[in-house]
Length: 357
Image (cartoon, rainbow, N blue to C red; front, side, top):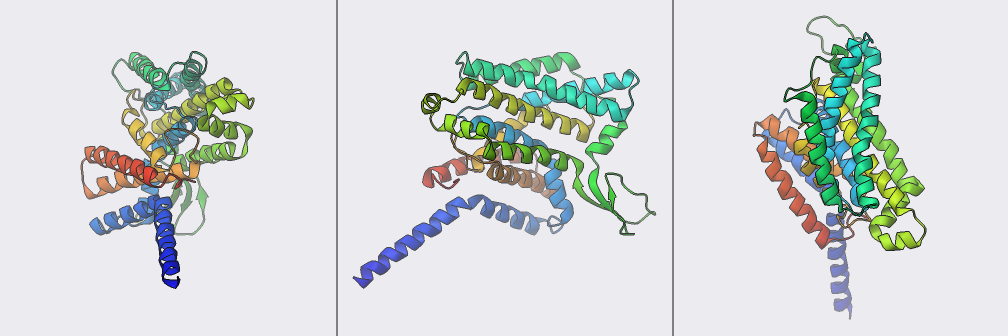
């Protein structure tokens, strides 16, 4: 009897350990990434690299949140990458046009960015209307919008990347929230002047602060508001959500608008960082955005997922991309590894169906 009890207890412990590994595999994977890249290049493990990972990953973080909202409802948005590209073109053109009208940079940049967000909501509004009211499959609706936004962007640029933005845009996009000079007197947003050879610590890139401010707001919306609860209900069982009185069509439209909102934010961060607008700026990020959500534990069937775990999923990809650049491997290697990690995430989800909860 004691022997049977001991075996049962060992089995429970082993099952608990496996379940714990399943739930925390993303954190373990991030640790392994850091270990491997640190061994490959001793300069990798530093504060500068952490900031570089966050800086390089801002667009992925934003696009991943865009996908998260849609995937929770059981849908998918293939257009986010080209909505982002569309937003880079619109933002660049508007800011340059406003500057040409005589507006100073400190006015043309925020006004142009705000107008870009308003224009950028239109693809999501159309996607949501097609999916919710005309019952067009999300795959078809968003894939069609991919083509529409890409085509409009190409027409606006005529094959030439939008440029000639005010220098202030680059200062904002490549600046930091906090600077610490040798004197120890902190400076916010403005890099202090120091003597040649002196080092100034730049803490938290502006675009990281900008991105995570909106991510935090929408994390609260998803976790604490009626709209957020409705999304999980729709993804869990749409028929049950309808019977419970949820206005499913209305909430689906809002979901795709949120997706386009984050894609537009990603476009604005791109313009600020690289001082240009390109129709294909986010073309290669759709796979990464979807992968980040799945790696973060959200089910493609809908009804599950969280902002925190999605950010961890995006962090896996951001660390991978930055690490590969630092050790000198070519970009296409990232696509191969992201595909492999995505398959791994799906396998783990099948083995541990509750690991994301």
